[in-house]
Amino acid sequence: MSAFFGSVWWLIVTLGLLITFHEYGHFVIARRCGVKVLKFSVGFGPALWSRLDRHGTQFVVAAIPLGGYVKMLDTREVDGVVGPTALAGAFDRKSAGQRMAIAAAGPAFNLIFTLAAFWLMFVIGKPDYQPIIGHVGGLAAEAGLKAGERITAIDGNPVENWTGAGDRLVAAGMARQDVKISLSGTDHAAHELNLALSKLPIDLDQQAIYERIGLTPQQLALPPVIGEAVADGAAAKAGLKAGDRVISIGGQAIGDWREVSKAIQSHAPQGEALAIVVDRAGQRLAVSARPTANPEAGTGGAPRWLLGISPKPIDPQYDATLRYGPLAAVPRALSTTWSQTHQTLVMLGQMVTGQASLKNLSGIITIAEAANASARLGPAWFLNFLAVISLSLAILNLLPIPILDGGALLYYLIELAKGSPVSERVQIAGQYVGLVLLVALMGLALYNDILRHVS
Image (tube, rainbow, N blue to C red; front, side, top):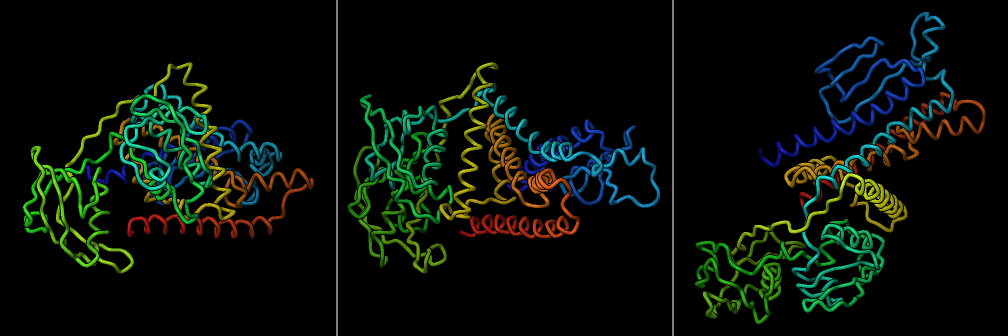
């Protein structure tokens, strides 16, 4: 399956599962409160499948799988004469407390799904990399971290795998907070270093923060070994071959393939010949190669200099598994859900106050790609992805924006405080405001998605 069709398929699976569970929360609590449910729809648009149950509820699977809804009986939408018995099942005839329970049920069910997904993920066991450092650059290099060291704790919190270390570092980076990293050296001696994340610029998304930190797990380190030398490229003309290990470029020592490109760009500002030293079958060979410019690949109007070489492919293997028994997985799922909730709320607060970049908002394209990537990594990783997205849906729907569940809850709280419902005029105005805010939010997220692809 291609990346495009894989992304579309796993996006449909993700939204289908989470939206159905969310709407089922509204549905089941509405039924418990005696509300007549007219329609339960997964998706929008033309119906692909429809069925009517014995309670008179129409269940629908629609063509556009980007949402869903539960339509309930409402006296304000009733046409003609309806008896008092039928109207007793109207949503707006229920108490404010019952309506609040129905509105809150969707996000609550998303939270239940999150807990269940994390629990199952821990029981299955999520494969990962050990927190052993491979390539070091950026702020990590400035702090003195070295390849081969194991990260044992961050600010006193034990680190179990590379994902755990990365999440903690990115969260601290979002807050621009310095952290203390506990390390076990290659000689097994323990020591501690300070990583100055307060130096990070504000206008960075999470991926850019991770890159600026400059840490790569040992399993993903790219050795500076040439995998292919293009036949008519500068490197091939100079005599370089696949299998050559790059020792230095322009006198700059090379320890990782990521340093190759940086060395080429810094030592070939005018396309001058570069002095390159490689190791070939245990023997050192010095050559001179003149890189060529590719104006379209550069940034800021500057060309990108190329030698016509690519790295040798690597096949990283997971060497750590995060697994718990069914009972032990329960508190771990609870703590992970709380940690993710806290991290999400902090990030939202930072974006509102300008402490974090709005580039961190992701849209449907990024979600689709992440769904496909996590599904390729196996069931545990996909469960982790579903849990995070479900939690995000719960939090998003609880925002006090009219048209979302949080907006409805706000109206009902006002009703409880003043003793009467919010006027229909205010509710209609709020719906328009909420729609504008939601469209703007989705538009910004889609813009960020497109910008990531373009850049």
